[in-house]
Image (cartoon, rainbow, N blue to C red):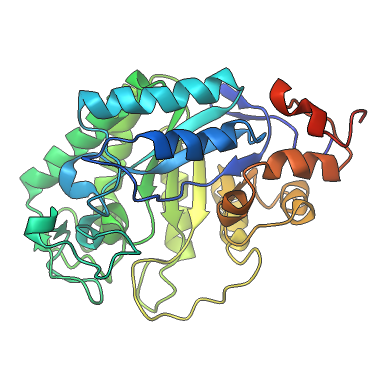
Length: 356
């Protein structure tokens, strides 16, 4: 058996293989409620052989959305709609997780394909919030959160985790990457606070640790992931050294896996984009913090994904654009190794490899 298609035990759950679907924003929900688009979009991966499907960044309150069209998990209608997605995934042998998020200063947008970026109030826009009143490049200035509001958001993440379990997700990932709210608190470039949530490393990670503890308490033995941007790619910002230190602490707070990405908090930085360019972050965190990791970032080919796992650079790979281009990526990858894995009965006639 290939390393890519070997099972992985994370926490107390075993995932059938290590070829996973990365969370990908679709900007296709209405009032935070997912519908036919998400059922078809995520359902395609559920019949495509992936061991784990991560649903996209899902806001824990209305002002936590990236766009007016992003999904949420703060009311019963949203919970019920997500349940139709998870039930389909489970019916076809896939595990599915949800990424709980708050966009912070990068929220209140329209869809990327609309003719302007920021949503006006009459388009459903809102006043964004952040650790400090510092705007992301080209975005309106956010309002700095009070301590009481931070504490309220911790509760909102916890409530979102409860709803995630009610919606029958298998695991929860906390989104602390890509320049969204929790990442904004981590980075000295976006967090200029002088209270218990700013300044020192210990203070800047406090909000995330509070969220982790609150979510862990609500999801019983379900796996808990955290997505980190391992570096801001900017001098004086968040970096891999701090990411390793944080990952070590996260492990002690019940986090089972770090989903290692990068960037998103600082505009105009040089990022050396190339196939597998973020894999070294997953490798360093895995090696130095002693925690399981998933790798992301221009991972497209089966042999490339296999090598990452076989060489011990990460425990799993998450593919985004490659899965958008081909939702059956995992089925095809297994066949490229001459390996027989479970296919949906309806697709079985399309197999080219029937004996491993």
